[in-house]
Image (cartoon, rainbow, N blue to C red; front, side, top):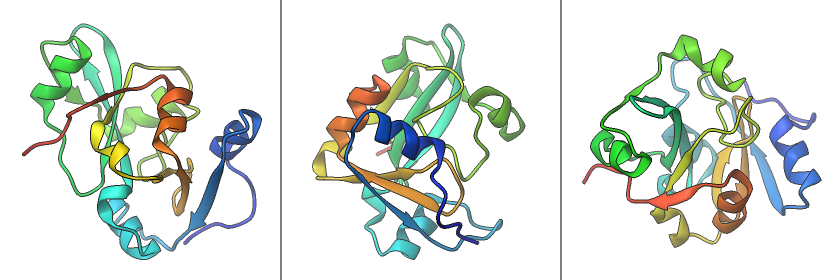
Amino acid sequence: MAKKGKKTNVMRILDKEKIDYDTKSYDYTEEDLSGVHAAAALGYDADMVFKTIVTKGDKTGPVVFCLPSEKEIDLKAAARVSGNKGVEMIHVKELPGLTGYIRGGCSPIGMKKEFPTYIDESCYNHERISISAGQRGRQVLIAPKDLVELIHAEAADLTQK
């Protein structure tokens, strides 16, 4: 179920940095924690709701990627842009210890450590994109430029064709 009210760590960071954002809540189930579900529940186009994927590079260690919820990551492109020969998805059990977030509520903002982060360049096709607010059932709408600057991300082509 969606939680309302209390600010998440993501929202507190955005407030502290004086970054403009809106927040939306939606109902979710354990069976479908996808960004596509979030988009449908909120009435957004799936290409403006970005999911956060955490991988491990063979040279760099953890690397974070943000891409439209309906797209699949191109692991070869992800490895190339991040300076790795290969990247692999981390196991869902590793997510909380590494990032501080759980599956379905992972945000690129406010992770335990700052990891190299890449966002799909299609983010710039939108005035605002939606990302996890750091909690299941909560999203923040933010200008792509503000997000990229805040998390020190690099825009790249990351999705499978």
